[in-house]
Structure formats: C-alpha cells, structure tokens
Image: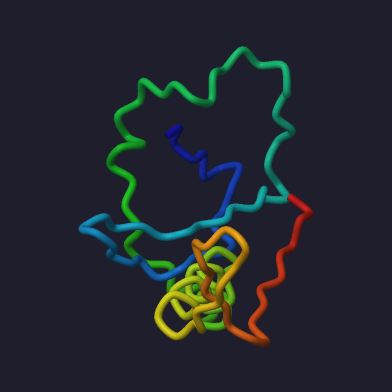
Length: 115
C-alpha cells in the first residue's frame, strides 16, 4: 500500500482499531488539504507498487482530534456492526435454494457514494 502524503491529505474519518482473527484493522478516510498544490494526474506512478518501506510502518496511534460521532458513524464500521448483529441476532428464513438466510427486520445502512 502506498504511503500517504500528509502535505496533501489529512485524515478525516477514522474508526477505532479493531482486532478480528488476530488481524488489527481500522478504516481511515482522507481529504485533500485545501492549501495543497494541484497534483498532475498524468504522473507515471503505479499506486499498487510501493518500494518505500515507510508505508509498512504506518500505525494508527491517535486520531483523538476526530469527534466520537465520526468514529461511531463511519460507513464501513456501521456496515460491519450490522453484519455482526444480523449474524448473532438474525432470524433464520428459508429460501427456494434450501440454503436459508438470516434477516433482521428494520435494519439498514446508508452510504455516501460521492467518492
């Protein structure tokens, strides 16, 4: 994963780090800093290959500058909470394939598809 250039981007949304199956993860959304220079889109940079080992050292330490509501309402985190709730509390329903499904009446998650 390429490292983030903090002169151009700042963290905007972040979830608390979570541990699942011994894998620590969090969701972070970045926004472009208004005073940053415009970056040319035709630079010959491969975003999937990063030879800089600094990106491996990236660790979420403190995003306390974000309001608690932002942490709780992060879209990916809300989705994961809903999936966990459906799996643990959902009602088993039969279907025509015989596989069955789990459902939870009245649950929904909305997404901002601007990005």
